[in-house]
Image 1 (spheres, rainbow, N blue to C red):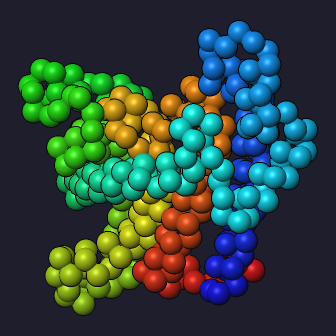
Image 2: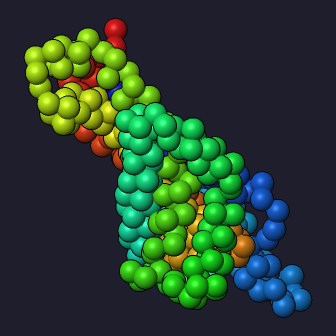
Length: 306
């Protein structure tokens, strides 16, 4: 088990370093001049060149690459070109805001998807209806679901705020959007795992021993369903923390995804690279935590692969 975790941690670190390298190189492929973005009305080439010198953009790519990774290993993500603040100080509050949205979104999709999966398994008569709902949700892009919820509950029924923000009232529609979009995947996993568990030998043995349906469902069926669901939760939390760009833009949620979009528009390279790197770390960390929880819930996953 320890070897498996160390191996996965090593793969995660390699992945983060790979993302950092690709992100750094990609920033120089994106068209545009950060100096021109900072001083759009500047007519003098000397002014623009002075800005490039201040931002170290005149240095060779190899030198910028070495400086970036030297700072990165010291925990320094750089300074924003536009706001002249450290990237960490800009990302930290946005990451907390996105974290609340990610948590609420995962809760919503687990509740909605888990309920649909339970209905489809325990009540065969509604299986076709559940499949229709799942296919409909899968066919709808995330921004379409968000816009529909915003138009209906925000502008039409006036049940939710439409001006953006990060309060308890503002989080409902973004979280519901994430929940509806992610629910079909959880519904399918729960339905498949429950069907396999209900037809297994150990469940039939438990029923033959006279155990109640509730006891069998709680202690034998749902325990096996929990393992893949925990893996999905870890993946979703990591991906959501890396920035739910579409949802944050649609609802004006001031999270890390919206910060990345704004920084990309301003060609603020340090902030863009910082948001991508923090997102990569979040994916690795939460996938590792999901593996730990899965090993705790399902002892079969503790065996190291041959």
